[in-house]
Length: 233
Image 1 (cartoon, rainbow, N blue to C red):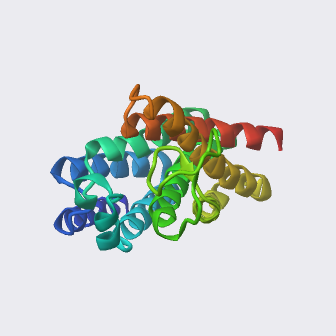
Image 2 (image 1 turned 120 degrees about the vertical axis):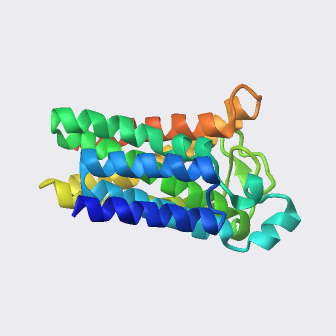
């Protein structure tokens, strides 16, 4: 079964490269994450990660020509590199390694919250650029332009909440504490997305870090946040 899934990973990687969702190095990085996620965590974290990738591609390509005209399109004409892949997926892999050894639900919460953060942030960013009305900088509430670092909108926040919830559904298969896990991962992803905005409005806006660093820090902190919520529930 796992051999078949690994073959599927290869096929999906080729398709992502063919449709220019990922460049060559990005495809290899995604395959690496996919295989190790499957080996360490099994089918459900793999499907969560795959869902994030599919949703991310769809959201990025949504009204892409309009995003180009407005100067807010994803860099590289929407084609993501290995830096994008590891920026969004490395934290989840770190938590997954911990879960593989510790076998604790709290680390499942951290793993899925990290993926939920990536999914929530991508949907909020890419859909918020089109649907968002009256975006504001999250730290100061000053009016902002769509696509500005740290800019949030009500529509983008709703997309983030839905994005976190979708990933949380996959975590329910791995725990008996289903309500706690659903709440923890959904909120972990949503809050992680807003942590991303805060980092973007401060460190990234000042040029101290780049977007890939922001994504990694946000998914790491989003995972920790989800784990803490699960613990206190």
